[in-house]
Image (cartoon, rainbow, N blue to C red):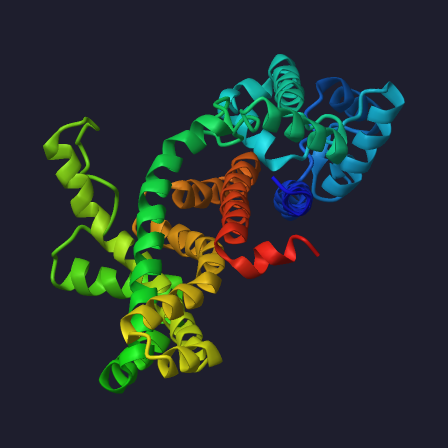
Length: 402
């Protein structure tokens, strides 16, 4: 390997690592900045008893005297609770919504009527908070997040139906479905789009007039639009294909023809909704590059020398394909977004559906982990295609020695 090639690879690896670090930080901070604090749950019985003994009996509306008991306004009671808690050295603002939901699931409202139940609630909150790494503030939680990236678990889910399962176990349930849906759809859309674009540029006339408007129209349709259109036409109206799930309810996954055929039947609508998104942009790009190459000087000179048109066209389309290879990385990124939308619309059990469920359940660990996996998939695809591009494009290879 030459010195220039090593330098080129080193530069690409450094930028890949920098982008990866930025992606990790964004995937951590953005969901948690949206989380926001909830209403503090003030259940410490020692503090409650101290407030009641010093200031009155209980919370109420307004400060009133009734049957010899003093009722304190709720806001004023909260002020007294914080004041007495700090005096006792026990005050803690327990207000993480996702942790509160987990604790309330395990401790009944009846148990909360006793001091023992209140102590159990506080102890459970503190234990879950520590387990999730949220007892050290945002920076402590970031360290906990990075630590669990390296051990491959991505932390624990905060969903009331999933805790204490790891995020990795949730992702593993959906990643195979997502890969099997996305990769074939992206590649097929890329191939079909480039073939249509090349034919439109070379044949012109009918192909150019028919393919180009259709490609432009298709590329303008948003991801959710193509999915909904296919769902309504072929799922609801014609009833050719199922409208949701990856296989029929009640079926047990098994390596049998009955199960595989059922999966393929459910596969059609989400698959073609992604393919349609990929075709349009690729066809437009390939047509433009092919027309540019067909009008290049080397093509005119080759024809002047009498070289067969078929041989010239092979070189033309090879050169026109080079930017499209790099564009494949971009199409993977955009198609992944489309696939997530398609999975949500069709209730397909991939990463998109896992993320949608996690967002609805305030499961920010799973949101971060899923988004990070998707980001890493796109980064790796872009990195590999960038490296491959250096070998197949002589211009890049020559630039390595500059």
